[in-house]
Image (cartoon, rainbow, N blue to C red):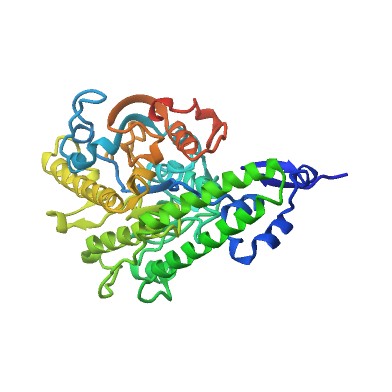
Length: 461
């Protein structure tokens, strides 16, 4: 006979074992009344425990065309490092930052595609590109289509995104058309996810139909307290009618209810700081002169989506692999990709690239600032978030994918040891496998196993 399974305290057990607990889920629901159906006891029996601590979130932050290593790599050692020009804007969040040197995109040396194509397609997937009809920038490069596997953000979303309205949210600015150079997130092989490049469209999708007190905070708090009061009364009545074992279990769940009550009273419940972002008048997000404002608005939208627990996984993609917009707003009228191909001896081009990458570093710091301003639990949303700054290349003029400029920000819910500069020699598969561990995913590998060496334990607390 096949035994159906339900959940208790996060573990599966056979239905006949559940019956031996003395109270069926249906009987318990009937006894408690309809008002209690959303509370932790029944959610646990359904297999979805109500979180009593802040959720951990994952955010990818993409910028293109490599960096200037001599101005990106910090000076000093693991904990006594100092930022050079490019990363200097991260100084206010130094203790919440991990700078990683020596992470190589080794998988991208396998399979078809030119440097930018493989850099973008392997970036979050660590897998070969599929053949296709998109020619690259070299005559000897075989044409490609898309990446051949799931991206790390979507693997995490599959694990933690089922209890939020949106599994993941992909936003960007000036991303361009649909091709291998413009997509980094994949649900699976040949399944790229297009980012939304208009912050007003993103707002409408995430926050449509909301009025004053847009997320019903006051009403939610009132109703929450009312339900908690009723449930505590029901628990008290039940205690005299169930076995000793069930009374013990009721006490455990009553403590969860008390914890929820404390969070409601203190105003730090998940989503308590939920506020709709103020975007102002609509702008044309396709115009390069509006790029800086579009970037800022997209970060506002993402921060609000995290604060409101609309999603726990997101990505911010600024232009694309081979991104070639001018940066007049940063004092550099030249185009980014064109500059990135200049030689190292061209000091004018090098200094301009430093300014472009520094501008992006200011945006990365700005994203951390937004999340640091949102209180949550005993800390902030930044404390409970992992933000990874990624690039499809290590250095633009050589198209190298060694020494990729990875920066990790946030606290990861206390699971990361931040405030450090680490010199490593590892494939980027290992970085993503380590990120899976942060989110409780025990996969043995990620991406092409030929390039996997193991978890980067040094990153973990």
